[in-house]
Length: 564
Image: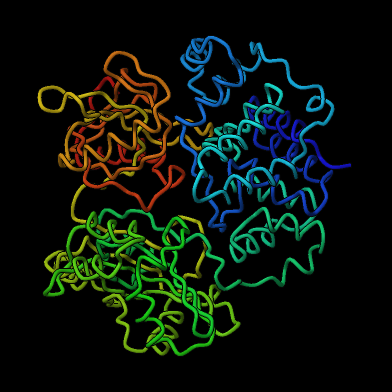
């Protein structure tokens, strides 16, 4: 019998109300066992708040403004019910459930006779994503309305969460890997490696059910299927990196650019952003460069794309982001904002995965196969003086700082650890999510120009406010930000607008303080936005644990106030 979407929604209700990790993993594992192989990937994706697999380029392209209007039409109740529920819970899904519990609509008997299945929900989501062209908006709205009209209150709650990509149950990908391992009695290490290689834990779950442990242990990379990048921690200075890496490490320029993953098979090349979005059409010169220089039949490479001026000097990140967003008049954009590629890693080459090789060996393989494409500037040293000189040279050349990479480190997709470090000469910036905004004053009175900044709580999925700022953006950027935030607005209260947490910004600050003002008990002093991170998703934002860690590290340089 096909799995019902209601059973998935009820599982998510239980997960949301449970804080014990082992219990959550156990509940999810038991549910996964009951599913057919073809139901597993959609189920896993939905549990993680995604309508499609991580690697999929399909997007729903449905704004909250559209969703809220559809909800109003379907429910035909006082919208204050939604606003009151949202005010008390801060959760759009919970507020939707409250509305559906009060709905005056009597569903058609035919719809009530046929309960929604997980497969039917996926098919509806695919139909919405594939709708394009003339009249597409109206057709999308009809499809969404039809789906929600069949939903019970608890189903509507989680359908809306999937639509907006904000599940907030605290059940993250690492726990899902544990659940898949438990459900199908496969070692966790095997599941994790397969997830890293394939790029999607949902597909791993389907393989585990259908093929078993032996097949899963042999899976390899799929060209044109992007995988999450390996991430780096911040180091205070070159000494910390040298110490953590055993006295010697590889230092490389950290460019003020956008990380890309490049896939090549034969004469076809695709370029993916850090968010795993296909940006091939926006970067034709990068595609041409790869085709002209990479002779391998198949390859998955990593590199950094930077924007440069007419003299080849790096220019600010925001100009580069214009290129990544551009899908029309590319030739004109390429002339105005030229870009340059630097390669720094190779994950796969001619049918062979290289991620288990030591970093230094991968770098050597990359050098042999890069053709005329430059690699990131690098020195391998055990001398602090040489590393500090190299850092100064990087800054003088207009770059952000250095990366430090442990010589024997394997490539671990999607994980952040001490094998790779970022080193900058300024206080570590934070990537935070805007959760609300206020209208400004004077000439800014029509613009949302004062932003509430929040860090992610890994345990609950909640975004906790750590400060506000009205500094850092140009007038043009504020106007564009206002447009984006209005589309994400959930409610307005006086001059303040509460929004769905979607927009990520990089934030500089002077220090972090204790504060009773916010639930996080943390506040940034003199916060200012340094750039909009269109290349990052809310799940890439920094965590509240990291904010607290930076707060504690401050006392290595100065005294602690007695009240702390």
